[in-house]
Amino acid sequence: MIKLKPLSAAVLVLVAAAASSASMAGDVDDRIAELERQLEALKQQVSSNQEEIVVNKEEIEQARPSRKGTRFQYGGYIQLDAIASDYSDGKPTFYASDDLLVASTIPVEPENGKSDAYSSTNLHAKSSRFWFTTDTNTDAGKIATRIELDFILSGSGDTPSVDERISNSWSSRVRHAFVTWEYDEGKSLLAGQTWSTFFNVAALPDLLDFVGPVGTLFNRQPQIRWTMGGLQLALENPATKLANFPYDNSAEGMPDLVARYNGKAGDLSWSVAGIARELTYEDRTNPALDGGSDEQYGYGLSLAGKWMLGQDDLRIMLNYGDALGRYMGLNAFTDGYVDENGNIETIDQLGGFIAYRHFWSPKWRSTFSLSAAEADNPGDAGNLARKYQTVHLNLNYLPTPTMSIGGEYIYAKKELEDGRDGDLNRLQFAVKYVF
Image (cartoon, rainbow, N blue to C red; front, side, top):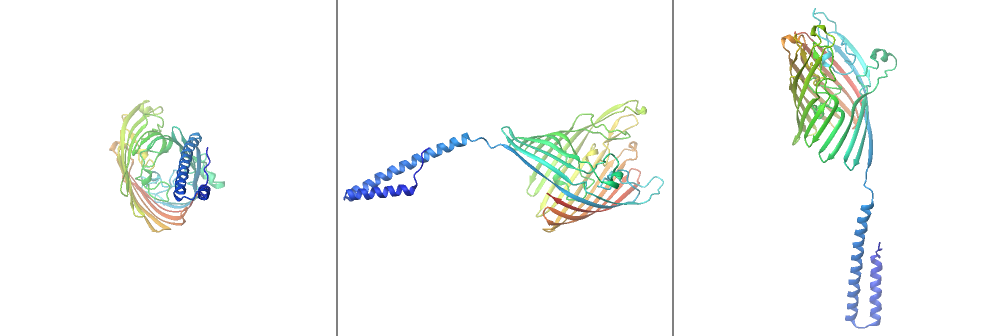
């Protein structure tokens, strides 16, 4: 590689040469001609050196190994929840009902019309979570992974009341565990467990309760998802829960088929999604059904969006179908029911919410959410849940962007097909730090 002479040295050489030429020849024209000749020679040398530099730079880039490797990241948050609950008609039987709102477990007045109110106070840190991700550039495209854990809905050996007396040692559970292969720009393949493709997580309101409105979709499960731009197609884990049939068929039937399209119009981000499901059962224990089995197909539709209103935002979701079942409101309704002939019948269901988030100042914000869900239960379906309503209103203070201290009021009501109902009033306080 030729080493360039400094420009200053070249000028000195040129001046020295000119001075020497002037001392040997007194003719002005000869001196000018000599200077022009030497200047042209200098230009040619500089041009030649620049070309060689370019060639050598290309050789270095070609010889340098491609920049590949794996980037690791981790994060999560610590959260303490303090929850005071007041049930109108008795104590819920589901052990996690005091940790988060599970509308389907709200007790209703008994058939004899006599019931006692029940109150509880609960402090826990179970919703704290931790995640770890990797990001690798390869010859085939970018490959990313994520694993995320939290501690809520942990029975810890199905004896939570005993554990609370001593150590509150809740076991962790997998929230997300998936790999994503981005094989081309805007095109990717996901395999593993994460949010259902049917559920637009961006539309979920900013609430302290772990889930939120009863009319929301909410589901994480194993799946294979293909993304191409705004279109997403997925095969997801099937599971069936039927009224009048006590057992889950978690590994039966074809995978749930999901299609979703994500769009944007100005400050509005929206999605439309559809799901097709096969509901199945095979009875091995109930003599009345004589070892029967059946299968039925159902569907669900969802429209969701988030509309930015300056710093504030409005979030909406509307869901309808005859097999929403376990996908809406933490299984607020069953997927269907088994009639007296052993046949699966589906149930038309409707649910949704609207939520408005307002920033009072850079450090204060509130969210107000209204939600409802309803099922059109046939007469032979039995005394199933018919309607739910929920209200959330909170106020949060953020001393720093990564820390929040807030309080939330929650009201929820459940009504059965025969008209009996029950409600819940709850105050929830939370301290959260994101790292």
